[in-house]
Image (cartoon, rainbow, N blue to C red):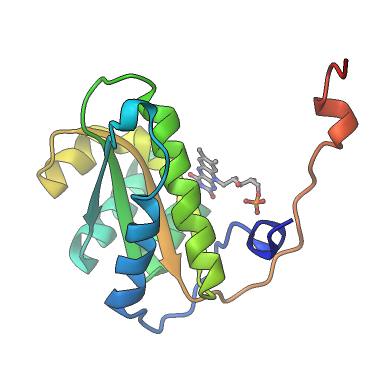
Length: 165
Ligand SMILES: Cc1cc2nc3c(=O)[nH]c(=O)nc-3n(C[C@H](O)[C@H](O)[C@H](O)COP(=O)(O)O)c2cc1C
C-alpha cells in the first residue's frame, strides 16, 4: 500500500506557521490530474483569505455552536473551497477523486489536511462571501500538522467484500 494512504489521517490541530503558496499550488495541480467522468473536470477552487476564513468559522459557531471543524477553519493556514461547475455527469464522484489526490499529495509533502463537508451547511453564506455562484461541494484545510492521531478503525476486507466468486 502507498505509504501516503497508510499514514494519512484527518488532522484537526495545526501549527500556526504559514505554508508556502508553492506547496498549495502543487497540491491543486495534483487535484486537477484526477480522473473525471467524460473528462469533465468539474472542480473549481477558491483559496480563501484570512478574513473570509474567520467569517466562515464564526458563522458556523453562530449557527451550530462551538465545534472542532469551525476551530480548524479558524486556525489552519489554508482553506480551499471546492466547487462543482455544473450538473454534468457524475461530477460529485469526479470531485471526490480530485479531493483525494490533493489529500495524498499534501501527505506526501508532509502536510496535514481535513476534508470539510460540514461547510455545506452554510453553503449560501459561503457562496455569497466568496462571490462564487457554483455549487459548493466541500472545503479542504491544509497546514502543518500539530498532532499525530491514531488511525481510526476501518472495517475488515471480509466485512466489505460481500461476494467473491
Ligand atoms: C466527504 C467527507 C466529509 C468530511 N467532513 C468532515 C468535517 O466537516 N469535519 C471533520 O472534522 N471531518 C470531516 N471529514 C473527515 C472524516 O471524519 C474522517 O475522514 C473519518 O472520520 C476517518 O478518519 P481519518 O480521515 O483520520 O482516517 C470528512 C470526510 C469526508 C470523506
